[in-house]
Image (cartoon, rainbow, N blue to C red; front, side):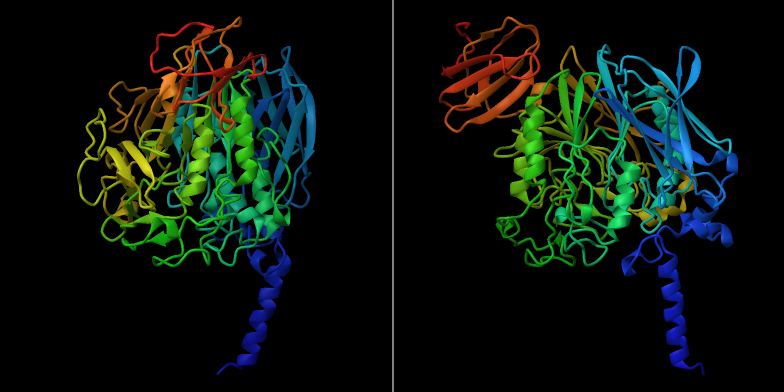
Length: 636
């Protein structure tokens, strides 16, 4: 029998060696990013990722990702692991007047193998070919697109949840996206599920999608699996006590979290307020303008309170509620945060700034509703309420939706795997903005279903589609929602679905991607939902049942109209108009109108102020206006 002390000290020695060799210090940094560590060339590769990252040396640049805005172009170049003898520097060249010209050089950072490239004084009115080069002969080429301000319709591709249970290519989605030719791509999170190998997982994601991200601006934001957690309630950057994240905060070392931010979000326009959180963790909430559409990018995980220790246990996990007798007020406690004060202030400022903007939308990780009944398992996965969604805390949810509504903006997100369109209710059904949750890129690990227990159609006005369970519902936290469309998986056994991935082209797992079209002349928004293995160049390829759906921009404010203020005639075309309730100084909405006249609607009696201007409502003011309940008005 082996001496237990020898076994103990031998294990301790090996553990200390592993920690010493790690790029991230401390116990929680043990065995992170092993597949892309500097010393990988000293050992035989183990597993898929370690083989994947060992590329030919003239292929070390994996991909590049960029945005351009406000006379700045920001790009992150992502490299495969370099050998000790290889130069850790890359060069950005731009093609101008038919000639390649050196624009920038940047150091390759380790850990992470990324390089940041910023060019100020950027002319966004021109297409500019680019190439990123490394001295070993690796070249990655693409196109920095001009801002499509003259296009009548701006298209955004919306994707999330790139399951590690399918390591293959994403050629069908990439091919379809190139056919759609979106002006902007939005990846809402969970680009990788390789919790301890985020650099390798990020490399795989970028390699899968590089043929479409290389030549258009792309937004990537960070969700729970991107930072190695099952869920995340960031709670301002504190340290979580476990990888389930329910205590609030981030479990892995701050160096790891900051590396992931540098890889996935540095290329976004500069944050609205760059003040870091605890542990120095970055924020990235900002706005991205493309073609006259302003997209507010918010972090619905970063400031949110964790449920553990704050609310009474009502399920098998701190974030799950299965007690049908529970009181929703018991979990909506004073002091709980969702977006946090900083981001609410950002949305307030963003909603009033329309410089160069005709329409708006908000992008984040997850939905402001619990639009899911079955989680993970069709047979025994029924869950009343999931505190991981933005349905909780309810007060924070309603504050966020009210801020989004002021700009008549829809909300786009991912995370839930289940594609849905809902209209949120804040005080009443259908008084809030629309939300579109896109499907998972790969939905073979954790299926979700919209499956009301009573199996009856919801209340309210009927929805014009063939789906059974549409209409007005209360989610598990008693939030008001109106289900417009949903895309349930046909399979009830997701485990079996993983085993038959070769047949997925014939199987409806409801994986795929979303597409959203913003039509500026008509001020309409169209939501589309496409299957992963469809061919959009084939006219017989159909979207999921319930899609497409088109709404008017103004439908994102569904409050019941009490009356109308006098019709306004402005000496400017398409001005920005703001309506303020004088009794409490609340801004009801700030929007860019069409034309030079506007009939402002209000939602209660009282006195109102109307402001207007070209980019902000700062050039015209009329106070003390009273509404009437008739649209027949005297013009002012």
